[in-house]
Image (cartoon, rainbow, N blue to C red):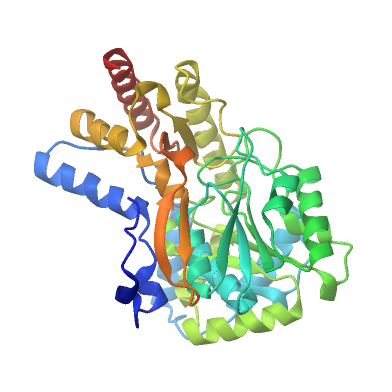
Length: 420
């Protein structure tokens, strides 16, 4: 829901964090749980990116063994050295990214890692370029770091156009965020696009933050790590900082484990200070679980296949119904346009939950455009008008759940079309 515009005097003395809108994802999560509890009827949950596949048993065994054998002491703030060394090899072999353990940080989920990166590169008055259809947490992270968000438009296929990015930039732009494969759209950026963005950023003195949480879920084309295009650039001149996650590829959502590769030693030192202040150290047993997870590449490939099969088996019906322009090229989600029903995203989501027990997320929650005062406090946060007919569904759920949920969604949409 839009954040109401407070009267100016109500902001007097208010901390920035108190003015930042909560993610609509959490609101829908609560509404679905309340609906289930009150009605006693299970809700078909297409609103949350919780995979139906689970972490391999070897991961749990490694965690338990670390606990029972007493490997629970502090590690360095950067993370367990053995794990960081293994991650450096993984990035070189799988991503084509040239880094070093001194620039590699283990984090409690990629979410915290992204927040740490933004804090590390922020400077007073600096602006960050975000896609106009974005993960709400990226916006919250930017605001908490003191970065002022500016939004760049996406093409009809939700892919990033470098010229549109350039047109949105200002003299205060310092950071460009790239998310490929993207949440919520599933858009995947190719090498020419990424190279153009890097060249543009380098020429203007920007830093790039590349969120690659869905790196192993590209279905059309291939995943290109943005930092791989800087392999031949001297380390002090690099500008791409990258974030990765164990949550998607190995379904380790509740383990909270991710990692960062910073571009330069200077940024690594800044991240080190941020992590000292925020963490002191990562959970040691979870890091041993991550070390074991890195040996299970065959499981990552199986998980990729399961999500891709869901996409290919179920989403063509949504496309045929005119609600999905094209199948998402990657990621775990699809953005539907329900304009033909005559309903807004909020009306559609509320009606679908009430009459069909299916939970989805209104796209307006991914398109908030906040206004800030001079101190960086949010004075209003209205969704972009073009987002009012968009919804997001998750395709990482169990196949039967996705089939049932999409069937109910399409029937609800047909009923509304008939009534319009």
